[in-house]
Image (cartoon, rainbow, N blue to C red; front, side, top):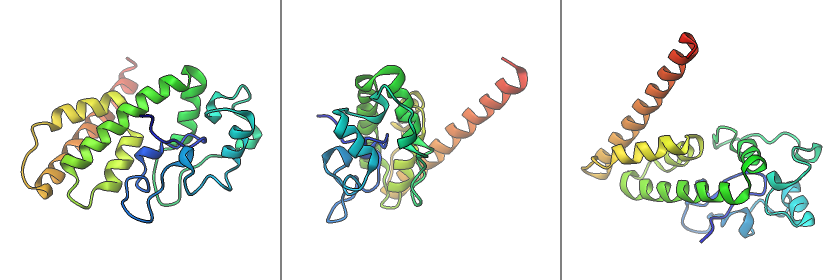
Length: 177
């Protein structure tokens, strides 16, 4: 099954609103979610018969404006990143990676969410490189314990991996490698 997505580049299946149960759950923009009716990007894509803004021959355009993050959800500017990826590699390539990312998030929520980590996990899986997420999930397989212990251990592992990546990036920049 294809995961829902925002025409603007938002990976809806990685959003906390999509991952919520109950009346406040958003089904995702491509499935008639909360934000589609007034969205100029959605309207433009539908008028042009496009699956996504990044698939448009005119991308990027003035209609797009500035696509920033949500006020209350840090996506690391995922919308423009997604659109650029689709423009360069195609919608199908993005959809394959996105589907894997969504499946990994589903697994992480089931195994490591202590009831207070949904936002952290959603933001992590939106912002982090897919290869790094694969490695994180591989390393996290050894985590056990109560939901609280597992959540704490996963958060610490994710932080350690992010710190290591930052140090490697800094070293490469400093050493000119």
